[in-house]
Amino acid sequence: MAVLVMEREQTIELLRCGDSKAWEDVVLQYQIPLSRYLYNMVKDKELARDLTQDTFLEAYQAMPKTEGELNLKSWLYRIATNNAIQVLRRRKLISWVPWAEETTIPGETNNIEDSLAQRELVRSALDKLPGKYRSVLLLHDDQGFNCQEIATMLNISLDAAKKRLARAREMFRDAY
Image (cartoon, rainbow, N blue to C red; front, side, top):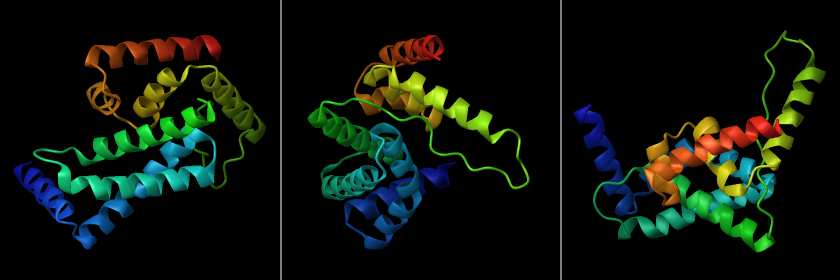
């Protein structure tokens, strides 16, 4: 455990110094999950790719100014979330897409139509949720962040994150 903490601290220091290999590793590790998360938020693959690039650029520019302990994953998702919300506000469209496209298991042909219908029902239900509830639901259930991380990312209290998640789940159940 201590080795992982030291390794994370060393990685952060390399990133703060602008080490290109460290940044390359970070981009390779987080590019696909961030892009998928952003796609779920903005419903546009090209825009999600652009926002992913903007997130890394913003992180690269801001990293030297950071101090102390830094949870890199949460920090990147916070930047990505802020970028997406900013774009959606500009469009005056706060609308989120549910989970990324699922891949089918070879040899599995169990009612693909049912699966597609189910996915459409999920999308429709998520589209009915207000943006602040969709974001919490996606961050928690799709991206795997815990409530404390979500609270930090969205700059809200832990209680507010828990309440939003509970309300989002209730709203989703009602809409579904």
